[in-house]
Length: 139
Image 1 (cartoon, one colour):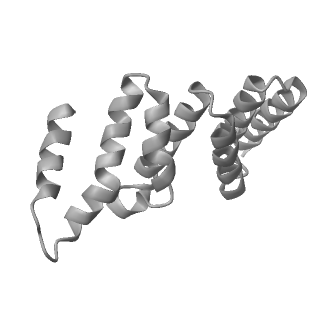
Image 2 (cartoon, helix red, strand yellow):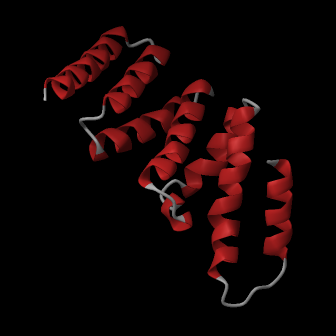
């Protein structure tokens, strides 16, 4: 991973007029690569610092919805593990607003509530996730 990052860093240093991949690599690709390495090292503050500012631009590098969602989930998980409750609250809220029927989103809401010592809120979020799973298995 470090070698890939080094080659991409060298790539963006050379001027490439009209090449959009260079700009995307600089603005999105490198921060995502660095964040993944940081997550593996459990450097959650670095992950949040790298991904939070670009979270709405992840789609610039293409990939499937699932691949882009994996980056978003990495950011959320880093915020939760790193104790960034305010960031996690924003991210969970964004996810629930976009996909209110996702059990994953409600489980992350529960994890955030647990971290904040809000037991009733955590229980309600888990119940919502369970209901969604139960509803999905009935159809």
